[in-house]
Length: 229
Image (cartoon, rainbow, N blue to C red; front, side, top):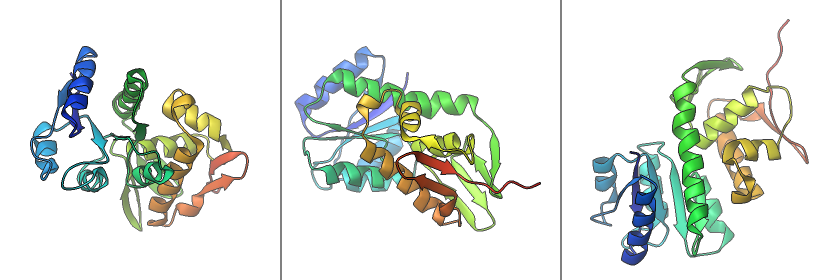
């Protein structure tokens, strides 16, 4: 049974979500101290985290930063706020998806299932290394290494990078990326994909590979690699 940590201070909403997710055979844990969420995170060792933005003491963005400094576990944000910057901030901090309140439970469960499939089933069958532009890409550990150092990627970032590398020097359309990553693009926006790709490129910049992911205006993205004779 997969474990979920639900960081939600609205007791009635927490109970409703927990009951619904339990019916889907998920083990749902809550937070005992909103001033020390990391203690519960360490105790539970969740397979996925759901975080509300507005929380006591520290907001969800703070706890996302803290979790990301220790783990690449999938993260979904919940929020009753409808400002686009909230979604952008969530993705920039390393979240995998964003759900606005009020929401249909079917949408939430679809997002949870899609993220868990690509985070865990994907890793179970893709335990391999790939060489790209002189770097070693580890699909299992979500890392990219070269002589300039090592970077760690989130589940979304490694999935996007793999999709582009497997079709290197070819343009991969935005629709193809979204369909592959989120299964059903009705649950995702163009802006969210842009944020994920920009975040991936920024990390690759740290080891001198950011320019190897090219944006083809109006077409999509391409992972480039010089072909040697």
